[in-house]
Image (cartoon, rainbow, N blue to C red):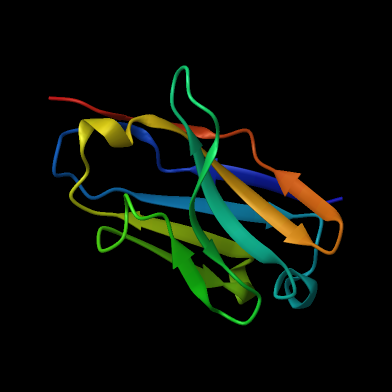
Amino acid sequence: QVQLVESGGGLVQPGGSPRLSCVASGVIFSFFSFYDMGWYRQAPGKERELVAGITSGGTSNYADSVKGRFTISRDNAKRTVYLQMNSLKPEDTAVYYCNARRFQNSYWGQGTQVTVSS
C-alpha cells in the first residue's frame, strides 16, 4: 500500500512561486520509479482535474491552463514528486492532490490547499 503526503501549500500572493512536494511511503525507491505520478487539483464547485503528470520514464504532460508556468519533476531516490508553480493566478486556487498509478492501482494523497490571493 502506497501512502502519499503532500506539502508546500498555503496562502500565496498572485505571481508567487511555491513548490509542492509529494513524498511516497510504503514503497521502496526502486519500485517507486515504476509509478506514473500526477498532480491534480480541485477547486470549490468544480471537478478534480489533471494539472501535470510524469511517467515512470520521465515524460511529462500539462493542462493547457498551466503550460509554461508549472513544472513537474521527480526524484526517485527520494520517492518524491514536485510541482514547481510560477506566476500563480487566483484561478489556481484549489486543493492539490498527488496521485501514483501503476497498472490498475491508483493511490491518492490527502491534498494540500493552495490559495492565491493578495
